[in-house]
Length: 183
Image 1 (tube, rainbow, N blue to C red):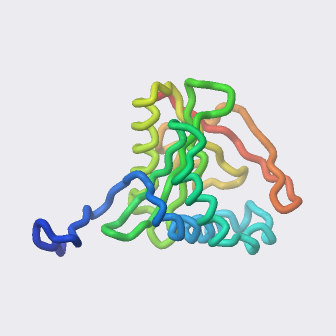
Image 2 (image 1 turned 90 degrees about the horizontal axis):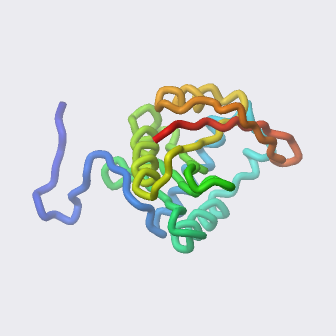
């Protein structure tokens, strides 16, 4: 396997793949990735109008705010990179009503970069942060019918906990199921 590398000390030196804290300049890429990932993964599970109405700029503004003004020290944004290219992200927050559980509120990978380990690296970074902040559990949600996400969470060691919620998305009810694991 051939790799190309720049000379040590070069400004272009980047890890092959990495996860790092998000910075404000990541926001446009995060908005684009979320819109593309949702359109790719949720074509059959979310209302078509909701997917068509996704605005990358609006999403980018929301992620920029989450990066630059998190509501608490336990809210974190992480960015996955393939070399210098942003290819995914995760958002981490305390789970409502419990100090022991951290919640992965978003974990998206650019559809052109799925199945390259970026999602697993993001989830591992989330669980590392949760351990360091004293959490004992991690929780994530899947949209009912999203078998790819369910398989990903199962492979990562999470399992459904029997908790469901219903969200109103573009006038349609979307059901989600909670998944959790002990850290």
